[in-house]
Amino acid sequence: MKMINLSVNWIVKNIILEHNHHLTTPSKLRYLPINRSIYSTSRLLFNSLNDVNIPVSQQTVYFSSQVGGIEHMECTQLDINNMSHDDRVDLNNYDVDLMVEKFKLKKEVNLDFFYSTVKDSVGRLKHVFWTDTVMIEDFKLFDDAID
Image 1: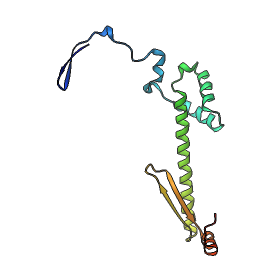
Image 2: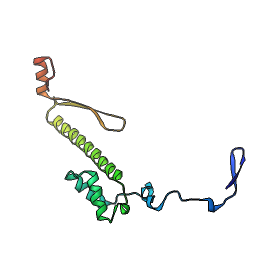
Image 3: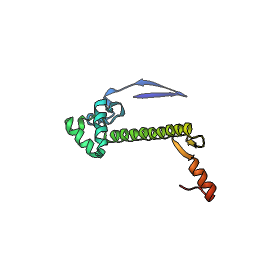
Image 4: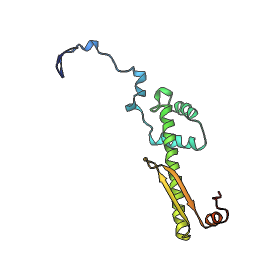
């Protein structure tokens, strides 16, 4: 390929295609992000294996044997690990939502119940504080918080 510099712009004058080469070998194509995905049926399998605490490395071995070898997998072990991590983060946020919902119900029943939550810039729980009648009375008695 021959290029001529005209200040800011470049103009291609000549291309010799025989000097071209593949970006990757066919055996490595599966590692390109565009070729990697975890389909819903595979996701169900990985979630089931996660539920019974099978490590991701063993999940990868099992899955590769089911699809005819690791070269036929459409995801990598890292993809499976990331999926598991993302699912755990979602579950943790679910736990926080349940706790806040329980606090709201307690506040409706007990007017002395107080809670406050602080979230970070991403929306994850950073701090939580709560107190109820018993805690308030303990503080009056001992001049200290008891947990």
